[in-house]
Amino acid sequence: MRLPAWPAQHLAALRALLVFTALLGVAYPLALVAAGRLPGLDAKADGSLLTVDGRAVGSALIGQSFTDADGNPVPRYFQSRPSAAGDGYDPTASAASNLGPESVVDTLAADPRQSTRSLLSQVCARSRAVGLLDGVDGRRPYCTPDGVGAVLAVFRADGLTGRITRVVSVNQTAPATPFVASWQGVPVELAQPGEDYRAAGGLVTPVRGDAPEHPAVPADAVTASGSGLDPHISPAYAAIQVARVARERDADPAVVRRLVAEHTTGRALGFMGAPAVNVLELNLALDRNLPAR
Image (cartoon, rainbow, N blue to C red; front, side, top):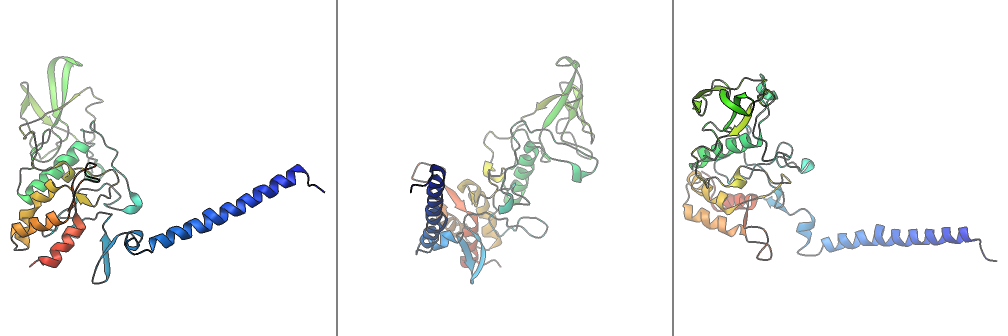
């Protein structure tokens, strides 16, 4: 006796469900787990953890900050690139800042905790801080000497045309000094918290300044990666930190440079990406070979 069509179809579907459950829900995961236990692959499967005296200190795949309790850089260590993931390198909040090239005007509030800095001001502040920490020129185009975006709101008598009637340095507030005293003969004012100078009709005008065309502080020292978890820095950023780290560890800079070279990886497959330095691995090597005083 033949079954009706619909029970036969349901039985076929049930058999397919059981077969694919066994293959994809049991056999395939177990095969991957087994592969991850193979010698040479087990460390990567466990997260590429790095250990000191049997204690995990981090992952070679996820960056971390080398700062003190107040968030200040620890001078004896190489510093990582900035991170926008949570409070910094938070794997549960991997993200970028979503700020772009047009983010040049800060939102200034009477309560500094409610103010938000534009991408330009963040870059300027980071470049200035790196310059002071590592003894290099921290100036960048479109940045003020005090580390904010060099941006003016220029008001004209007829909107976009006519004589200039007012100029405001939109990212600077008292007690700062305007980065330029006047603009085309009109005195420059400091911004007032809570004011929206673009909405008031000001023409946003970034000012390049006299910074070098190629800043001494490289781009990865002042910008976060897309994931916020990048464990690497560029060889250029590592190079400007060598003198500081060597001084703090009372070491020969040539020895520190050799350690940097040992922890620098080349381009993937010889042509993709760029050379990079793994910061955690490098700092662990420093502690092993050149303990701090």
